Every structure is written in structure tokens, then in C-alpha cells.
Amino acid sequence: MTLIAQITDLHLKPRGLACYRVSETNKLAERAVEALNAMDPRPDAVVVTGDIADQGDPREYVVAREILAGLQMPLFLLSGNHDDSELLKAAFPDAPGFDQGPKDRTRYVAQIGDLRLIALDSSVPGAGHGTLGEDQCAWLDEALAAAPDVPTIIALHHPPIRMGIHHMDAINLHDGDRFAEIMERHQQVERIICGHDHRGIVGTCGGKVVAIAPSVGHQVVLALKEGAPAQFNFEPAAYYLHHWTPESGLITHTAYVEKADGPYPFWAGEGVSWPGY
Image (cartoon, rainbow, N blue to C red):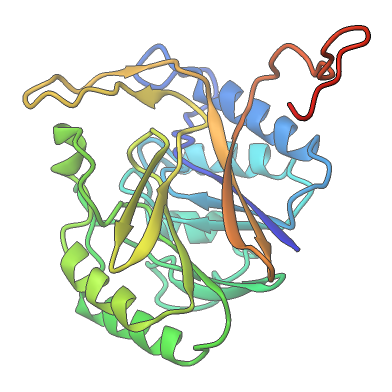
């Protein structure tokens, strides 16, 4: 069994500042770290699918190091459109995979338990949308061809699909068609995991399941009407747990940062026979 936690879109700020003036993202990220450490069983690793910083400010990466150092399991990082890849790699010089690839790209291959992780850098400096570029697409194709029998997760920040929230679809992965072509050729890909959209969303790309994780901070408002304004709210902060077994393959669960009431036992009452829940 391999268990990977995915958190995304932390949008960390310099100490004392709130994101968009109202979202206390540093505090929300600290709560997520506490929730992950309290899990039983504890995840084998945590993958952060981008937007670790809010503005790519060096001070934000100092905060990121302080907060993420609290995790009691290995940490795998990649860049989002709010990140500066070179500053991120400089702030976490010992992060797995950061010794691979170009200095200014968070692109690497790693093994987590029974699963192979391929992390991609879809960030475009100064832009909200994402691209992989032909060089990175060719590298991805070769990396997948090198281990065709190993179950693999592809991680990138920008979703390669459109999901109906128009202002977010405008800044998705702009070379998603090229990415989909590669996915169609490699059957060992168990899941494509993304962030960016600040909502829990499931779709398909190249015949593979795409799991877009909610943020551990604020969420994007679910507005499917064309022309709806870009807004966020404080729906419950959440993250994904990707659970792998040889018998079932990869199963993805949604978990919430804040504790809910309970747990309570299923109890049907005195003398009641109950065949299930």
C-alpha cells in the first residue's frame, strides 16, 4: 500500500499579510500541516502541486520553509503560476528531485513507495496560464517510455482540461492537446494530479483520470455561467489522498482540514437487526 497526500495552492504571504487582504493563508497552511501529521496511517509523502507562494516573493519562500518543515513525511514540490521556480528550488535545495532538470524548472522523476511520480513545471513567468513546451513534452514522453510497467502519477499545476468555470479555463494548460497525445500512448499512468482551480474536480485527458485538488486555503466560487466574475470564498479547506494497492489500483479520497463533529457509531436501536449501514 502506498498513500500520497496532495495539497495545493497555499498562496503563502510574508508574515503579517493576508492573501487578497482577507485570506489568512499562512494560518490555513499551518492547519493543513497539523491535519496531515495527525493522520493514521500517515501518508508516505506529501505532494504540493504549486502556488506555494502568492507572488514569488523570497520572503514567502522563507515562510514556506518554516511551515512545511513541520511535515513529518517526505515533501515533493512543484511550481504554479504564482511561483518563481528558481527561487523555489533555491529555498528548498534538499527537496527530492530538485537536483534534476534545469535550474529554473521544477521537473523531475521520483519513486514514492510503489508509485512513480513525474513532476512537471507548467508555469510561465509573468503569466496566469500554463504551458509545458515541446522540450518538456519530449522529456515526459521519454520518461514514461523508460518505465512502462511502473504505475505512475503525473503532477502539474495547470489542469490540461476545461471544466466550465470560464475565467479559470482561460488560464489552464494551453498545450493540453499535446499533453493528451502523450497520455494516450502510456497505459501505466494511473492519475494526473493538478491544482490551480481551487476546487475538487474530476475529468479525463488522453484517456486518463485528471484529479484537480481543492485548495488548503480559499476556494474559487463555483460559477458555471459564462461571464461570471472571478471570485473566491471560504468553503471548507480540503486535500486529496491517493491510495494505491495492487488489487484496486489508485483510489483518490477527499479529506478536510478542519475536524467535523463525530465520529459516531452506526446504531440502529435496541433489538433492531440491521444488515448494513
